[in-house]
Image 1: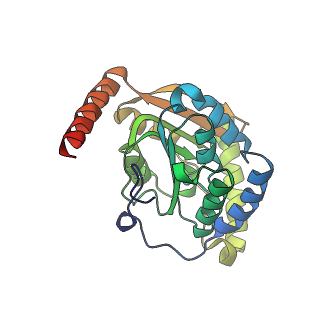
Image 2: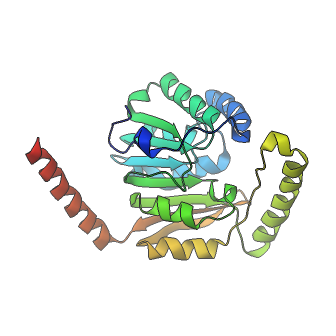
Image 3: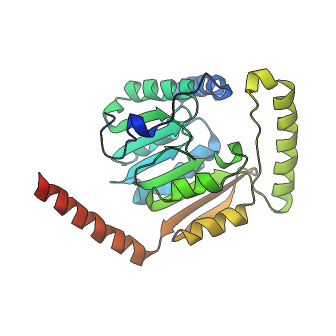
Length: 250
């Protein structure tokens, strides 16, 4: 399983961390995922935005995958394989269990690791759903995830501008007060609102252009990017040559 295409090798993953605060959230999310396929409204919005045209026949990398409901939902909509990476060991255990329950363990892999640091193999679609807000600094996360995205790059994050941005920053400050008060439980975790205009520039510089951008459920910004057509063609040619070389060496 670990040697399947698109799956990080154990040597490429970081040592599994001790139980973290995400594990408690994951347990609750996993219970909800057993009642309904996708637990969060904004995650459903992201799956809908991606649509069959961006998922069918493609591989998907879900960074900060949590219980894996997003990754598994892409398989149900035509993705050939889904890989999930998350910091929480408990979250990964829940994701693997859900994959077994949905009979897609042969097409999915979930591993513990920091998406900003681990070596990521290339996938057609790379997703960061409610993940940017968990990192105090996102440049390393963006650089690492963008180099792994072959065709599509998508994320959801708190808005950073306008009235919605003001509200998001106020809500984040209140949440961080709770996290600080209950510091032992949340292991120093804090939430962040990042400059999404800067994020957009970084994604565009990597060769992507936005195809869907908008507000979802008032407190989330959703963006889907695709590579420029000429770059996609170059990648397809490179992939074809690589596949032929691999076949010739067998």
